[in-house]
Length: 192
Ligand code: ITT
Image (cartoon, rainbow, N blue to C red; front, side, top):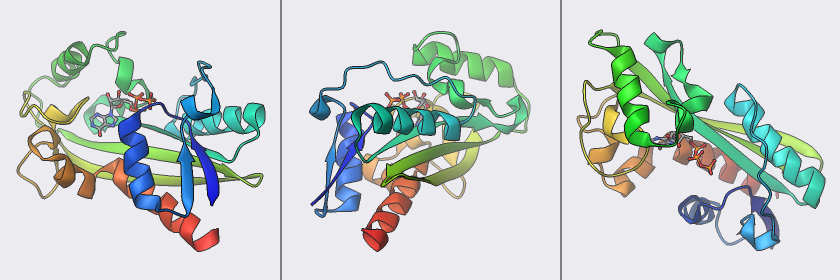
């Protein structure tokens, strides 16, 4: 069985990835390898942050691993909040982050946005990137109470409901993270 460390302590993300990659891969978390470090994440792109995290683990712990970074890009705001999605308002308080986004967008009609995830895989001294995006529009207010983060604002193209109004199965069938993880899984299955 091939062991890979996922640079997360988010059990939900781990479950999602393990289900997609299958039994041939044993995915461990940071806690499993005893890593309690505050891994630096100081890049200004998703690629840079994902790479910084996987390279940190690979270098310090000598393990094959992968890391992800994701966020929301709003076209009319020059692709903000982007890598600052989790702390857009200067805090991790999502109510404040959402309020700030709605305030900056105002009532302008151009509300195109996309969620992006980038995964960096460090395996056998190589690095590979996998990306997932989902396009959609930002609403004029919150709708729905499921999901997390900016989900109540985001209606994916071709759908009538926000991510927060969907079941997790509905969201996971089309989400940026699911797309990136599926690409990672295909690569691992084809090459290892
Ligand atoms: P880690 O500890 O795994 O880094 P995180 O909360 O920083 O957790 P991400 O890097 O995946 O998670 O995402 C950064 C932020 O982008 C996240 O806090 C949300 O505000 C937003 N975001 C990412 N994916 C999202 C999704 O599927 N739905 C809504 N918001 C999302």
